[in-house]
Length: 155
Image (cartoon, rainbow, N blue to C red; front, side, top):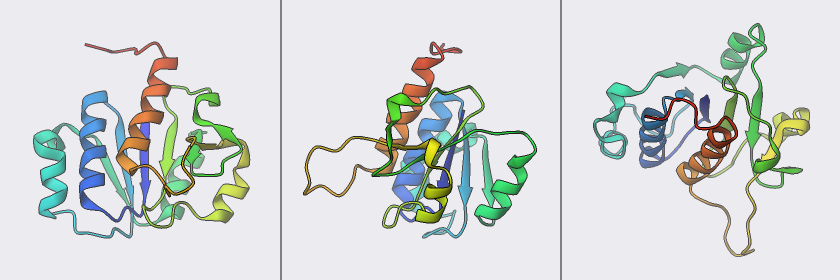
């Protein structure tokens, strides 16, 4: 599996997602620009000593990432509020990419509209709550994908 963070802004969120990726042998893709420096102490602290166990890739922008994956017929899942389907309705395959946007702005609306069939949401129940934490969202969707695959590779 693959987790993609598009223009992440908050170091501890990215560090927590890196730790999640290390624990699940999931590749992490970070798409610039970032709202922090990669040597940020909060990023390292949240990722603890797991960074050495993360397969991660850095991309200059969305276009570079997308172009690099067109040829391999990668399946992209866009997780963002107001998606037409619940994240549990996705039928995930091992090489899929779970894509999450910036903490403050989410994913670009044009990108979502162009990929409506793979635009998923996590249900919310309190209108006063804007969203869940990014690292929590990544964990929810990733573990649903892994569950569907029978938790293959569990130690």
